[in-house]
Image (cartoon, rainbow over all chains, first blue to last red; front, side):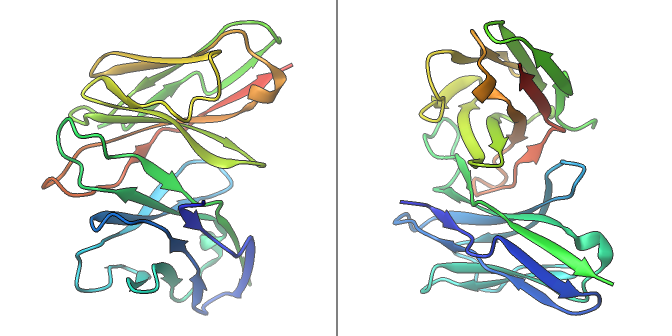
Length: 120
Length: 116
């Protein structure tokens, strides 16, 4: 079974509007972290935002916010005031378990990604 | 810090040849990951190390693939013999456990491998 599901292969948004990119996850571990990365056409992977499973509040980083709904196992990325430079692939990822020294947890699993295109 | 450094950036090789990809993680990071990215399969975790020890190599596609981390500042991913289906972008990433909780991985620029 897929651990991370991104159901939107592609999305379009008008410049200056907000957009939500969907991500659902599957884990039985009570301790996990959720991450969003951006991959522009140049190919590098850029970390955007992180949400821990025990965090009480939704994470925010500038124009990025994470709509974390734990009971539904969803961690949607919201980009406010879209800019042309936001056009890229966006990946949701999850790490299960705390990263203890020498522990067996720590792997970071990615979804298939959503291609976002911002229209002028 | 220069970030995660991968070499080479591009590699073109003939089928059957040995290919070695290299990675220098960020100093102080003790987790290192190797990923493969293709259009068909997306980002696949191949193997990851903690304190130079391989923890999970279940993502390594077959015995033709091997990875080593001889010290904290260097890792290699080797494919021998290479096949056209190995053509992909290979990413190395590193991270450190901050406050013993989850933390992000920092990615290198990737190596684009083409096997002809």
